[in-house]
Amino acid sequence: MQLTMYQVDAFTDQLFKGNSAAVIELNQWLDDRLMLNIAIENNLSETVFIVRQEDDSYAIRWFSPICEIDFCGHATLASAFILFDQQRATSTLHFFAPAIGKFTVKRGQQGFIDMTFDTQPPQLVTDTPAALLDGLVIPPKEVLRNRQAYFAVYDNADTIRSIKPNLEPLKSLAPYDVVVTAADQQYDFVSRYFWPANGGAEDPVTGSIHCGLAPYWAKQLDKTKLTAFQASARGGLVQCQLNGDKVTISGQAILYMTAIIHI
Image (cartoon, rainbow, N blue to C red; front, side, top):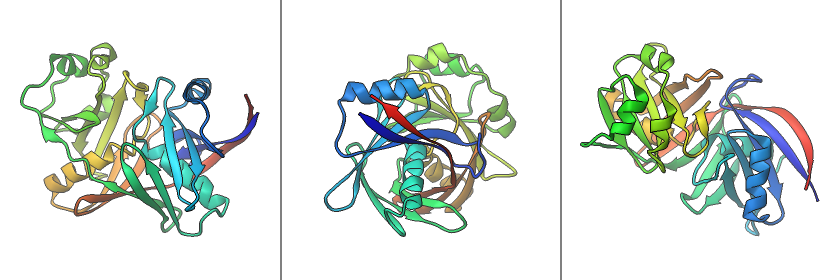
């Protein structure tokens, strides 16, 4: 069997920046183990598989090199970029994933793609796990959590850019990952994302976690339109717009590679 695969850098308009994802469209799902093996072979943050449905929507599934992931923003952005580029839709795409349900992706302005999801605001943690504090080394001023990750909030954006966590304790927090974040002068807020239990050491740009970061910082900064930067080595720009219990997460993308895989 031969499959066409696209590798896209998401949340950036420059090659070798943002977060890479492999995009594969299927006529029907492959065996779960085979899809995971493809993701392991690719060794990217995510490999995303999409299957077009009878109503022209797309079922979507995401795999890290370790396991299947419930929700991935940057790989969704990469998928939409490819589908728009191939003129599968002119302005709007509809997706479905079991963990988050139906959601809509639209072609935005100036090369941006707008993805609208339910917000996933974090709640304050009253009993912070020792493994989190051990892993982060630098104590946060506040710790919260949503269905995806622990949120460690700091006073200084320089701390976010320089922090060097001990990943082994953070791995023990599974199934939760860890995001560190702070307000910033150039952007509304910055973040970094560590996921040793589910994907690897550090995810370069994590669209999904902005479903929690955006409502948190919207409340702190008293604004509904926010510009965020994920301050990994590759870095990525994320635009967020709050509208009630929905958040539109926007980013750009660029094609790096088109390939044929043989399985």
